[in-house]
Image 1 (cartoon, rainbow, N blue to C red):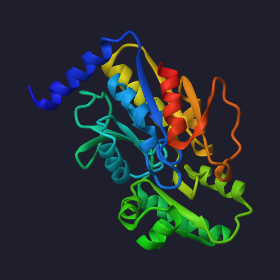
Image 2: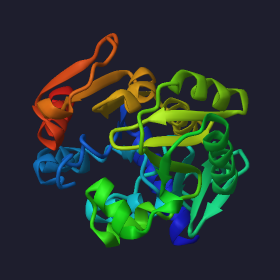
Image 3: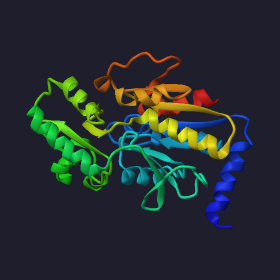
Image 4: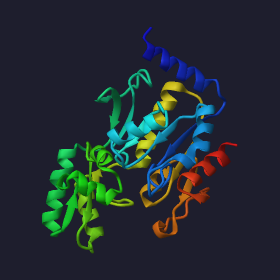
Length: 287
């Protein structure tokens, strides 16, 4: 028996030994990671609790495969993850054994791809720019210093953010007055325009909620048992994530970054901001 196969059996046994299995889905920027400096130090109490109870922590983020792979290493996680706003569900090889569906490969990981290839996204963004006479700067037009300037990352981190597979972030150099019209045009072409914390994003017709449901199905099919899910986010980009979990959590933002959010049934609103609020909510819901 290979080590990977043994690991899959161990995970299955561990999950099925519990009457109730918890899975935690989390946004990263402004949620698990501080919005200003990307630190997760204040989230350590919650991270320690999840590790002690062997609860999978699933990043669900606009970040790229390369970015999340590095963050998983920093928080010592081997769990699956969701990248580029639900464009792909990624997990270590043999994590689910026989997944029962067509899988793609990203480096040494397996993936369920829900989005569209990067080349298609870039080509369509050029069409949008021409059709609507937009003045924008996209990631593919920026060098690393410019990405770093707009994202708050250093240039090494910016290089990971630029390594895109399924979506293209961009900034507007002039105010965009016809966002609804552009979003409708994108939907007509099986794409999606999304407004994130720092950037607009053009991606395939998918979202964080669809990716969450896809990953929950993989857990149920491969490990059986009953699951309860917690989802943590901090803004409009996380609405679909929060709508597709049992226990949604809205992590408080600093006042200058706060945005209006819709009411979601059963939502827990943190008192602390960023990773401190993240840890507060995890400990509260799992105590």
